Amino acid sequence: MKKVVFIAGLLLIASLLAADIRDISIDGGNYTATVGDTIRIYVNANDITEDMRVIAFQFDAYYDSEILQYINHKPGDLFENAMLMANGQEAGLIKVACSHYQPQKGNGTLVELIFIAKTIGDTHLQFDKFKMNSDIMTQVYDAAIKVLPPNTKK
Image (cartoon, rainbow, N blue to C red):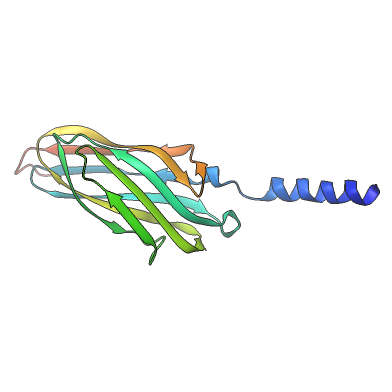
């Protein structure tokens, strides 16, 4: 009985010391552009540790299609050589999913989303249903975007 209690105690301590995937923060950043500019939104992740065993992420990103036009996507420096897909066929929504055969670690860019600034305005790239592996992320910060008139100095 003492062995069972001891092993259970060790497992409890190990689980408390292990990093929680939900501790990872996701940040879209702040951007200023003029009408006609290409805007590259870098979706960044911080504090991914090896023991989290992060091999995948997915999210939906909502944007104002009157202000921005989605063009394309590129993989970031995290999850290089991974299977990355982004479906932006519906105006105002991009669905992104990525998986890798090896766990990733560190700080960096998960994906780069590329837009054209169509008209003047303030908007957000709002992240929804952001998951790493199968865990819903709790520290997710949208991208803020300000589009200025043409020929305006930034």
